[in-house]
Each structure stands twice: as structure tokens, then as C-alpha cells.
Image (tube, rainbow, N blue to C red; front, side, top):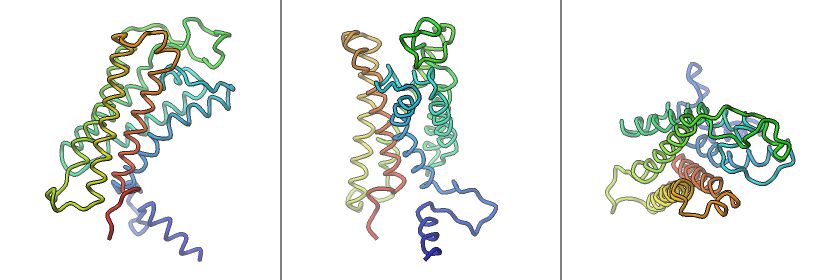
Amino acid sequence: MEETKSSKITTILKANFKEGDSIWLTSSYTLRKTVGVLGMALPLLLVVFLYIDNGYLQPLESLSHYYYTRVSGIFVATLSILGIFLIIYKGKELVDLLVSSIAGIAVLLVALFPTDNITDICCDITKTYSVTFLPHSTFREAFHYLSAGTFLSCLSYMSIFLFTKSDKSVIERGTMKIIRNRIYRICGIMIIIALAVIFLGGFFKLIPEGFYREHQITFWMETLAVESFGFSWLVKGETLFQDKT
């Protein structure tokens, strides 16, 4: 009974213990699933653990602003793991490797170049959840936005143009592949929509600034983007909508 459970777990994780000198993540399916889970879990982990630590439940202005709180470790660690996994992801063609590597480097830069501070003063008693304060830097903040945009744009491109590829013609593709391709395209488009709202609303002020900040539009659009890319990677990892055998 115990051996059966062990073999099931081994199959699910796609871990080959016969090759003692290899690492677990030699399987692209495992890597894709891990990237998907990390991406989808990030917003929830940040909100929940900040509430546990400080009792503050309302979302911050953006996911990046959690860098300045006690849950910064979760934010930085998750982005770092995502970055490394994306860099080592090979895919089936050179373009997969290049795009995923650019995305991986970009998300590492997001963590290395934080966004603007939560508050303009250190030890703000009205925002006790803010525990870190950095000197103002226009370059750092601009580079952060550029890196974040590059990261999400690459993931959108992968979902729409790379994940949808197939060795078979359109007629020969199975039902599950057709469904997966629709999901990839929808996820990619959702990321583009999220970026457009942040860009047009946050930078060009097409959405009234008071409304934009009060309703944490950046946070929700970033959450939409990471949930979309995470779900597409889970599907690509054959966690969902597998081909029928």
C-alpha cells in the first residue's frame, strides 16, 4: 500500500529516482507546473501573510509594494525562483529559450530594482505595515516598470504564439489541444489587457487618479496578469486538459 502511494507521488512529480546523478527539474512538465503554481499563488500569499503579520487585509497599491512590508521575503523569493526557472526553461525551439530567458532576467530585475516607497516618510504610524524605506530614485522606479512590463509581455507572447504551436496541422489536432490553445490565447490577451489598463490608467491618467488609487487598480491588474500566466503554464505542464490516451 505504502509503495503504491509512493509510486503515485513519483508519477505525479515525474521524478526519476533511477538516475541518481540527475536533478528533479529535468522534466519541462514539472518546471511548467512549478512556474504556474508560483505565479498563481503569489498574490494570495502576499495578502494573507501581511494580514497574519500586521492585520492589514486591504490590497496595497501594487504587488511590488509588498517589497516594503514584512512579507518582502515571499515577494523576492518567489520572483527569484520564477526568474531562475524561466532562465533554465528550454522549450522545443530556440525562440522558446530566448523569450523565457528574457522574461526570467526581467523578473529578477523587478526584484532587484524596487518600485516607489509606500510612504514618503520613514516609520509612518498611519502605515505600520511599511517597514522599509528607500531613497527616492527616478531611475530605479522607471527601470522597475520597464522590467515588469518586459516580463509580462514575454509571458503573453509565449502564451499566444509559442504555447499554441503544434507539430500537427489544424485538422489533425485533438479536442484537448484545441481547448488548450484557446486557453493560452485568452490568458495571453488577459495579460495584454492588464498591461494596457496599467499603462493607460496609471501613466496617461485616462482613469481618474483618485479612483485608480482608491480601488488599487494596479494591484488587481497585476494579479489578473500573474494569474493568467500562471494558469497558462499549468495547462502547458499538462496539469489540466491533457490529451486523452
